[in-house]
Amino acid sequence: MPKNGSAVIRVTDLTKDYVNDELVTSVLHGLSFEIDNGEFVAIMGPSGSGKSTLMHILGFLDVLTKGSYVFDGRDVSTLAEDELARMRGEKVGFIFQTFNLLPKTSVRENVKLPLLYSDVPASKWDAMAEEAIDSVGLSHRIENLSNQLSGGERQRVAIARALIRQPSIIFADEPTGNLDSKSGAQVMQILQHLNIEHGHTIVLVTHETYTAEHAERIIRIKDGLIESDQPVKNRFVADSDHLLK
Image 1 (cartoon, rainbow, N blue to C red):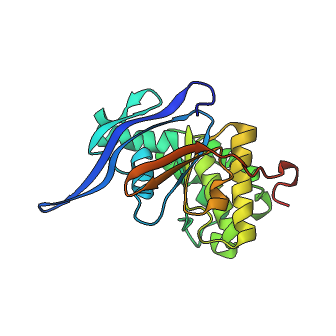
Image 2 (image 1 turned 30 degrees about the vertical axis):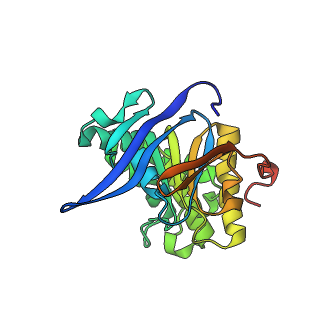
C-alpha cells in the first residue's frame, strides 16, 4: 500500500535460519513486502511468530540468511558490519518495550546518547535534545532523572531519543507492553502524530489489536510466514489537538 511510490524498505524472499551446531532452526520463510516512505505499518503475530526477528533484521540488528533486503535503495545484504552499524546509527530510531534508559541519568543526557557515536558537533547536542524532548511534551522534565519518571514518561523519553538524529524510520517493538492503558494510548498518540503531522515512517511490532489499529496497515505473521497484509479499515486516529493532555 505505497503512499508516494518511494519504498524505504523492499524485502524479497527473506529467509532467516539460526544454526546451533548442526541443528538448523528456520524462523522466517521467504517473506516479501514493501514499506513506503511515510507509512505507518504494524507487524502483528503471536509469540514465536518471527515478528521480532523480522524487526531486528529490518533494523540492522541481525542479518538475513537468504533473499534480499533493500533499504533506501541500498542492498543491505552486501554491507559489512561497520557499514551496517553506521546505517543503524544514522538511519534508524528504536523504541523498546523496556525503555532501555540509564536510570540515574537525566532526561536530557539519555536523549543525547545516540549523538555520542555520531559526527554531530557536541556544540549542537543540547539544542537537538531539547527539540526532541519538546516534541514529546517533556520539556518540564528535562533535568529529572529517568528513574523519577512514570512508565509513560520513560517511553516518551525513549521516543525523543529515537528522534534525535532524525532517522529515516522508527522501529517500535511492543512500545506499550509495560504501560497501563492510559499511558499506552498516549504513546500511540505521539507515534501517530509523528507519522501524520511530521511524515515519519514507523514500523510497529505488537500483539495488541488496539495498538496496531493506530497504523495504516497491518502485516500479520504466523509461523514465519505472512498470513495477511491489509490496510486498517477502521483506523483509530487520535485527536492531535489534545496531544499529551
